[in-house]
Length: 380
Ligand SMILES: *Cc1c(COP(=O)(O)O)cnc(C)c1O
Image (cartoon, rainbow, N blue to C red; front, side):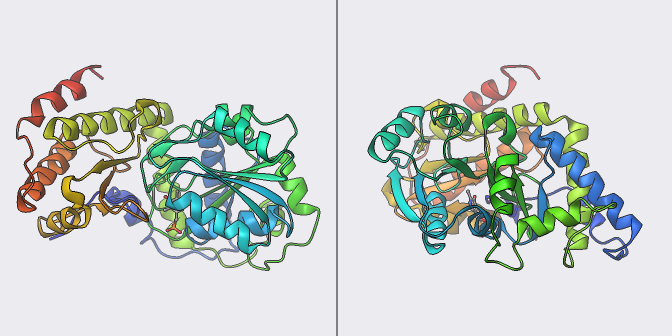
């Protein structure tokens, strides 16, 4: 039996999106491919509300982060790295390996960064060359209010690089409006596509920085990718993942036809209903402040530290969720990227209840009432 995927990537995606990837192959130097890339670029620009076209290349989210570091960080740059979880720590490590002088700004796990955190970090280390943020910290389910945090930086100050791997497509993410100079993402989470495509979106300032010196990476040279995108017909410098790009075009069509704004509201309502079910069952949410809670990924604290046991019990029921990462192994994490509504919520909440029973947890059975009231509250 096909397992029900509730993992934060890859995610369960509509059949038509996967099927598009099975279409007969086209050459990446042919008109059908150029049109495909053109369509993807136009839709991604509308999703990001951006004028600059994002660059797409083979890779996962980590590859996109590495590309940002290779093109926008120079050895010796002072880099303030805000981290509130395992992925913030990863971006920090990537910047460090690029030779940056990394200044850690650790935010307690369970919330996102705030403008006050930014002011504190700047007071301790003024004039950094670069700052790093994670938009949606997938290891804890915490969102950082990027617009507010970036507004707390000096105007024309450090370059702002953002890991938007688990936010793009699932929650509002507007790099040009917020002042992000380099944004990294990929296909297999909010963009509802199989894994394998990395996305990098740069601001005019980011492009100027990237073009001001040779990129140490031959393959991840974003300026070269940009030049190919701006040829008379858009293309990639090297062979792109053609079949995945077919699926990505279909996924973006799906999201745009649904309505990006309406989709973001659906994700928020889905997450809130799931949070309500978990609380009613007796599973506390890891992120205490409602403003920081992610519409894409919810982390709950499993009593007795049984995060891994719960993940395994769910697996035996045919449901895939994620356990905790790094220093928070007792969590269970559930993602809300896939299309769906009440039936999917009932499936995951009911399965968690059953898995809890298998793990000997004392969960309350009457969570459906509270969840249903939350789901139907706004009457959408
Ligand atoms: C998933 C994820 C990554 C890593 O992505 P891969 O595609 O596994 O390389 C990085 N950052 C965040 C926030 C993520 O959720």
